[in-house]
Amino acid sequence: MEKGQREKGQREKGQREKGQREKGQREKENRVLSGVHFMQGNYAAVEGALAAGCDFFAGYPITPANEVSERMSQRLPAVGGVFLQGEDELCSINAVAGASLAGAKAMTATASAGYDYLQEGLEYGVAVEAPMVVVDVQRCRGENFATQADIMQVHWGPAGDHEMIVLAPSSVQELFDFTVRAFNLAEEYRTPVIVLSETTIALMRERLVIPEADKIPVVNRKWTTKTPEEYLPFKADSEWGVPEFSGLGRGYHTIYSINPHDEKGSIEWDPDAFERLYTRIPAKVARNRKKISTVQRYGLDDAKVALVAYGSEVRPCIDAMDVLREGGKKVGVMKLDAPWPFPEEAIEELSKNMDLVATVEMNVGKYAGEIERACRGRCRTARVTKNRGLIHSPEEILESLSGFEEVR
Amino acid sequence: MSSATKATSIRFSGFGGQGIILSAVVLGDALVIHRGLYAAQTQSYGSEARGGQCQSELIVSEKPILTPIRATNDILVAMFQTAFNTYVDSLRKGGALFVDSELVKDLSRVPPETACHSIPATQIASGLGNKMAANMVMLGYFAGVTNMVGLEHLDSALAENVREQFLDLNKKAIRAGFDLSLGKA
Image 1 (cartoon, rainbow over the protein chains, first blue to last red):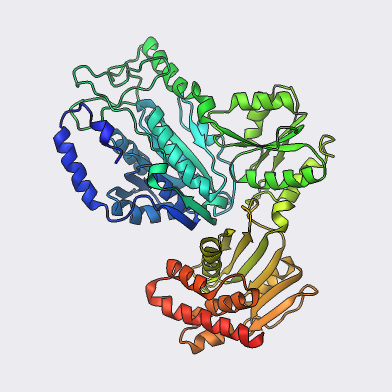
Image 2: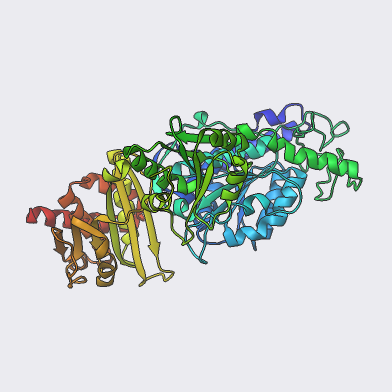
């Protein structure tokens, strides 16, 4: 379905179209399960991936991410895709990178301890500009306990220079919606995108509405129309641009190396080439920060106190806000759809309008440091943290805030 | 709390293997798909395949549910004594309690004004040929007492969540529990 544009002007067109017809015949189930469901979060992420056009998945078992692999192993082959159980996480992430460079829309899923092992593959994906989607279902206490402790690792895990895109869903519906979006962003910017899931929402069942297939926006990477002789695999149209894609096995003979490379893809240790490459790679994401890192505002118009949260913690924040507003307190909530790239402008604007900005998160207090930096002393800041393996209750948030005169 | 007060929190509890989580999933499915309500179902269980403590909370509301867990439950379903002992203290005053009469005999610490329903679910399921269907006997009884959902909706939710070979047994079990509730009414 999404292949139409890719083909334009490419060689071996007939051969690939034949391949597609064969692939079409292998589709035994509907790719998009439009309708109302009562579905578990991990399954919703799978359905989002399929709706976005995912055709390759590799993963290694770990709770609480297992239901992603379980459902993928059944659904993906039934819609003509390939499922691979890797021998470990490193195998899985490298298989994802390879499949992506061959033209597939590829994904893996794991949980915190397994996410550690992905860093080399993510660094590679950044360097060779391979679109890939990684679902990290954060867990703690060695089992299925809830946490947001990976919030910094999902940005800074891999070595080297990068601006990671991380989406943080708050619900089963958003596990679907944001996984679709993760694929679209990965394709648009040719970079790894992380879906930062959590035990709380991954193992929860909720109402999920899957739209009709033609109502789901699907983005595909820009395939080159140049001949192999003209094509420069890492040449972009600006210092923050995204190169056109050719795909392995199509006669373009590109070297996809983690080493510094020039526009031709040749390994190049020269500082100018290095600087050029690693200026463009973070910039292609950072320049589009406002577009990528959307925020949702609840009750902020007249507020003097803002609770800032991402992922599942947004939910008790809004409950707490409702209680405080019923008591006449002017409190609002800012929900960060994408904690990374950091929504600098949104937090700056918030800090100019608030007396108090409180970061609410389920860890020892990590992302709060970024919020405080961005507020730059323009308002008071506070941290509402909980690190016991369970989501905040609204009452706990209220209790934490009760010490602040802005809220009393 | 505006969104919380209109919601109903139901906790299903027992030991692993009793189909505790399935009960919550089937009820949630029926309420969301067939009654157009919002529901959030969470769960916890031991790493044992069978025998560990097991619970699932289902919050039901006419509005989207924010915080997906509650400190107090409006309804507690306990299919085993140890589960009852663990969760009875989170049942609110004036709530409803459903227990298996053979497996939960000590009902001390039940909060005041609780509507208590004690039925021989496991025994009835055994009579149907498989005591594993006790969860569905209880769910049918629950549906009859609370009027939250109709039998046809539960049947349809069962078809989505239960393997075909067990469908008939589970439907019979739900009906047996439902009939028992009518007899008592």
